[in-house]
Image 1: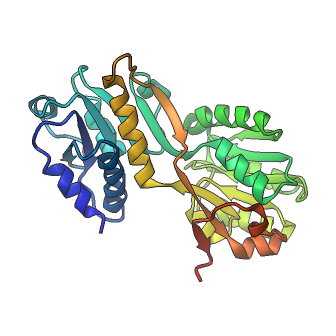
Image 2: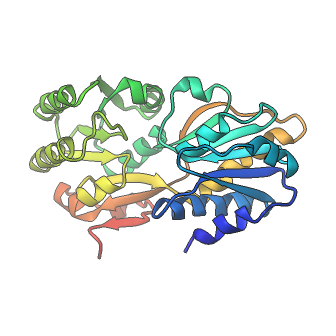
Length: 302
């Protein structure tokens, strides 16, 4: 249903200050990128060129194509779009989105918006749903999420939460970390945060362990992955794709204004929606309605 914006963008072969480079990919990702492009077009008032690329990220002559269209700024979507944008001529301002994380060295020359939710927003939601929580424990691989944990430490301090961040660089050590923590966490004080981390949050080993032990202990568990809410985690924040598009368009166009500067660095996701598991909330004795928080996705499905 959202394939239309992709096609419309691709047809924008006339002059436009802004272009979107996106991967030629099937569902469900095509609809995700389509919604982002819808937001880009809305923010840029339709003056957008679209260039689709193969998943390998190779499409020769993109810089020349962009010059012919009078493009000044580029939005790169997905890992393939980011790869293609890295080979563009330096004259183009580039912002990237639709990726989970990149090495911080790759974000020094451009803004990269991660799909990882902003920790401050996660913690604020946690305090709204479970105000008794005073300490958050997270197991992470520093090679993937060191930048995110730095943000989380600042957010925790600002919201009077204690953050216990434990490092693990392989699945075995991650499981050991969880086993040690799950035996000592206090359900009336502590909560466990599952970040988007391919090393420490593994769906076939770690997630069942965490869900089983936390259910038995009445422990609050929240995640950066909305699919975990379907499995039994209390809540998650997930991307609002149209709003992401509006944000990326604004960031890309800002340097084109008088006195505007090109943003740089990796940034956590602030354009988010909320998913909750009402069965888990009931088990924990939590009244989500009392929090007066807007909820966009509910599991189990009614």
